Length: 316
Length: 294
Image (cartoon, rainbow over all chains, first blue to last red; front, side, top):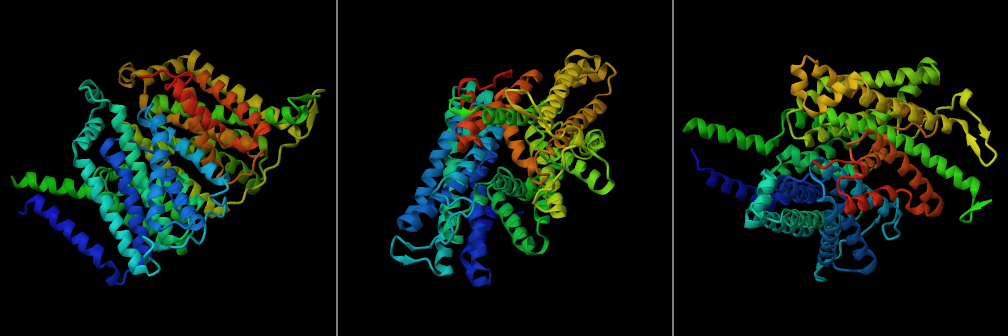
């Protein structure tokens, strides 16, 4: 039987190859890019839920505000895409700092309700502020030139840029989770009072995790604006916060690849069904939510891992 | 006569509107608190059940010609029955799990309900008329009081106080409170706890349904009416803390009033004022105004 580590390594390489070859496989590039944006969003969210044990019900606030910030800098200020994405990530991180400071004052279920409420407040601000374009949002955001040099007009060029940002962010998340800092986060997830009694300043760790997650969610939102060319109220709406939870839950909370899988399933489903069934998409998403919670709490990747673990135990 | 430079009729009108909104906050947060107390589930579907109540009233009239007064009795029962079904089919599998799963499952249920009604009736609202016995307005001398709004505030106060009495002053309420503290022990004393839990969820759902019927003549009956409200109600619950029943009623009404006043003085902020207050309260008293930190 193959060693788990080798198997993981092979999976990683195969997925990387798939990522690099995707444009040549006849997949619609804008679709794959959108998928990567949401996969990054879900991975950022998973950093908080999966590895720190905090359920934020307001991550759309970071995704969406960064989408607006990037759109505004590119469209009105003529910034290059990489700077505008950086600005979006920084803005989302700062908002995350403020939201996090308030939200970590409560735990568990209250944490979820507080993040949801603050995100709704940010939604209303986006609805009324002048630079967001209100109900219309920011439309027709140009892709611009990377570093002012490379035109992103071609889908293939943009694709490799998006893929690069995704891989780098994904590796960064992996680095964070496997660092000593990440170990403390996992300890907080497993047993917070224990972490406190061992002398860790739990709130600081939670806050930093929250800010990192918010900033990365922001990068995902910014990237989405560049890819799709618009930022709208949908990006900051609570249903977006719900979707990212679903992606993570469906793929597997606390696994590395789970959120990517989950995002793939949800985005493909939306793409397939959008023009065929109208509002039933919401119903289907609701049904998946219910089924996930009732029967499938580990998610696709989580269940696979559990299955492999059982087989390994049986073989011993 | 002006109050702070605002014509007093407009001022009192907004205040009354705030009180009406506050009555809905109070009724919904009360139901959330009762459900959370016994089931340990934050019921995200509460907004959807409220929407279901309003739609039931509308359908009863539209399809069966039953007027407001029938709806006032039937709709809460129907929504309560739906609640019982939801509890039996879904929620009872979750009691041993992290409460977050309850939130996620009820969120899914809310999406399903909302999506179905959106598919059937579209997003534009349906009109539901004020019953003729309550239409018109009474001139109180210092202001003109629309009868129906006064009725809503009155009913919700009666319902909230009734719920308080039921839970704090009756034997059934004592079982409920004991079940909240230690369900297993209550079970060993021969109380049918699963039945009690089921009926509690049903009652909470019925309360949301009743709020929906009361709201139907004031706002447009639309599939989206619940989801926007429920998030504000969550903020209300965070502000008040889920520990005390009277606390959630007072918080609900108070926040409605504050929202109404904001609409007079600084309308742009009226949609976010409750959230701002939530942030302030969390800074000063993280467990909420009436909450007990555990």
